[in-house]
Image (cartoon, rainbow, N blue to C red; front, side):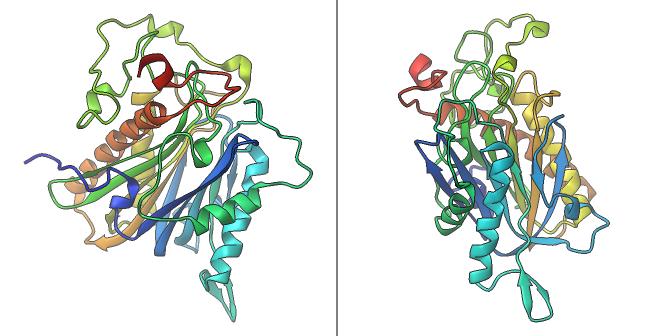
Length: 330
């Protein structure tokens, strides 16, 4: 018996999770928030050489706080870290957060990508990302858009527009795994000059065009990049309903990094801040060793699919520095 298709093919097929976007078209940037109905266990793994993060140290397996209230993906480079402040404010108003005496402190780790040179108006006088973070939280839903929205609004790859992608799978044992990603990679999601995706072997149900694998491949040592544009980083989240410890979440995030390597060439470079969070809602029993192995493999597969779906769903707007996949091949 193989894996099955899930209802939405989104990370929110993991019950109890919601995703919200907020974006400013003039800014050409935005924020994406993953929030749980209840706090959830989380881990993180960083592979890129230029990460930008908030509160990721507390996700180490030896830290006191094991659960978080939300995870934030944002554009805006270091300015975008303020998006998590807006999310924390909103969660506090909802009565959410880690209890310390009579105070609640929402735990909101976040990561950012660099989109400051994508043609948008960045001459703000007040950092806009805090308000965008709150708006994304308030928009959180089980159903959400992919493509040129949220943290993927101004994202690019080496040759095409990037964006927000998501995918999911139901494993034979009944566990669900899903991925959410903002693709702003130094490298490319497509093979050479053609429409085929590096992630094609993992595609399900023609979810990113059904173009199959490429018939020819360029020299792998001559991979195109956007190094001259100085604007990179792919950041994502992988989630499951399996009951995992913080250490097991960290391993799940580590395994999911293979999804980046399968879908983006090159990946994990010195000029990317590639990072993946992992989340466990613990709605189902803890997996045995064999199930943990397959869960990690599935996380990499759904992440690769989510990356390709992000680029496939992206749409162009006037003034873009790169075409969308749909403009060239759709």
